[in-house]
Length: 578
Image (cartoon, rainbow, N blue to C red; front, side):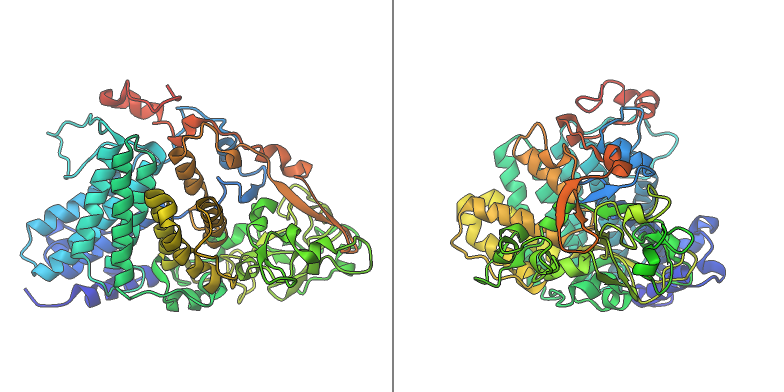
């Protein structure tokens, strides 16, 4: 067999298959004979590349959490956050088509005569992807059916779930440990390597621990999370990106970032704006939609052509602290001297009292009143050019909260639905791993873990937020409260907030998670910009954002169709969904 490196040849394959439209590289891998696919490590890597689509199991925005206010048109989201669903619903139970792909890789590689180094890369990818896919499902459903081989018609298909949730997580952890041993440290953009395996392993252990009843077993998982995190850090391969906004708001920043451990990268040759999150983050406003006089007072360079479906809540923006000029300390915006000295309608703009000197991530994440957005100055105030009441379609694609999301929006090209674009969804990065490590330290070691946890909280807090350091001598409660605030500011729109709230609630034995059992708020600014109030959500979105949470939602229901088809699941529904 001709010698070639699948790290380089495989990259050629994925570039062609993802970025062009020619022949074998765009034809689905299942259209080729197995002899062709598995006769060479390069074409085998092509099969693995095709399986990378499973990484989308880990991509999600903040629609399920209290970070976001959604439009009434987001029917499935509204149903979910109001907990108005039952066992007829399916939230992604069937991962097993993807699992079959990973098992196929492991089976075929074992039977091949590839070089050991090539086998390691292929198997490492399979273990990583299988572990990631199972984790995405375990967070939703807990115990799962374990399938670790390619099933045949002779096999028993009515598989039971594991007897305990720990058995499911142990399987995931085993896969990811295998991946840490087999994957190389240096990999091409968009492919998992050793660092990704360590990062995901730590988060799996952290999240799984909350669902274990035995404290000793929890502590074993927390210790594993710490061990995996330290192994990642000791690689010395990743560093925090000083340009937080560039990492999320430009493709060049995403592709060159020293912090992103694993991301999904989309190329403009096969991606347009409507294929990305950007379409639903941008308002829709122009001359035919504006109420009389709005654009005369607040003109736009060009119409905004998005289909906005989600906006940040006031509660989310509260997480971005202010450095108080009076004493240099980081505080909530309504605790600063500037706010306390503010007098409405005194001829002074409110911005200094509310939006000045914020955590720098605020400006990279949130568009607020009188912000630059693309080449426009947008006004979210009453009568402003993106305020919902300034649009003749008030319940449609405009801000209902006084804010827009900037994080995840590329403003270097004017947004229109069919414009080609590059895009990146970061999945794992060092800042997230630092915070996972801090949480594991606090959970495992309590007060004794505060100093180490604060050390790692401060890394993102100072580098990304430009906030003053926390003192290592703060109490456990202060550390825990600061940690939760830091995680919220750091990981907006990164498939984290909802799962973190579940993990914390479960670990602390809460029957109700307050943040998921409430209606969030909005910021209403006067037309002259000299006064404001935090208000109940306006009518167009109020009823759609009445969050309800009961403890049965710590695990979602197994779809009824599955319990009917699989006799082993007939009497094995998750609690509360029977």
